[in-house]
Length: 42
Image (cartoon, rainbow, N blue to C red; front, side, top):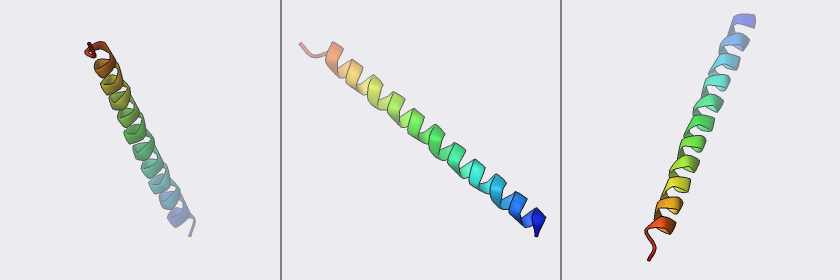
């Protein structure tokens, strides 16, 4: 029972970490696109 809870906690932590990383990467990509769009906007 305890081992199952630990595995579940680790799995949730991995999922949350992956989501946070993807969200940060997407945010950085959007910021880069916005910055590039602003600089190239004549």
